[in-house]
Length: 217
Image 1 (tube, helix red, strand yellow):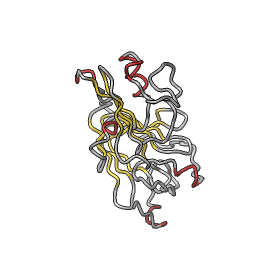
Image 2 (cartoon, one colour):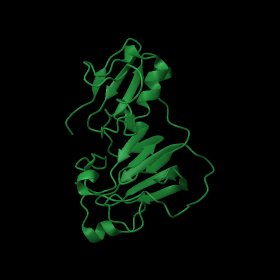
Image 3 (cartoon, one colour):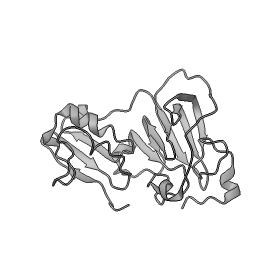
Image 4 (cartoon, helix red, strand yellow):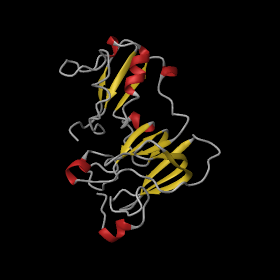
C-alpha cells in the first residue's frame, strides 16, 4: 500500500477521507457524475463542489471502505446498513457491507465499520484486505454459491469478521451472501469462508488451507 495513513479532504460542511491502504481502484468515485471527484485536478476531491446528498451517495458506492465522510453535524454521518451482506465477486474479493466488526482493522480506517473488500485468493500482501493481487495471481472463481444456509429472523446487527491464524474467515452474525451474479444465495448466522483460494467448495472453507500450507503473513 502506498499510503501509510488516510488523507483528508476538508470541506465547509463535510470532510471526505481517502485511505490508500484499502483502495483497489474500483472507480465508482472517479466515474461518478459531478465535481466531487475529478481525476487530474488538485485537489482530486472537493466536498464543497457537491451537495451533501451527492457526497453521501458517491462515497458510499466505494465497496472497500477506502472512502468515508464526516459531517460537522455528526447526526448526518454514515450508519450501518439494515442488512449485512457479503458479495462473492467474480474472480475477485469478498465485498462486505453492514455493521462490521473486523478483527485487527486499523482504528484510523473509519470506512471499515461499514464496507470492506477482503482477500479470498490468498495472495494479498495486506491480508485480510484485498490489494488486487488476485489479478497477477490469475485467481479464477465465478462467485457461484451452491448452499442455501438457514432462514434469518433479522437482517442486521453486528457482524463479527475474524481472520483465523493461517485459516479461514469466520463470520458471526446475521448475514446474506450474494453470488457473483448478484443472487441472494445463502443466509445464516455463522459462515466459515475460504481465504486461501484453494477450497473446492468456494466461497466456503473445506480445510484446503492446511493442505497447501496457507500463510496469512
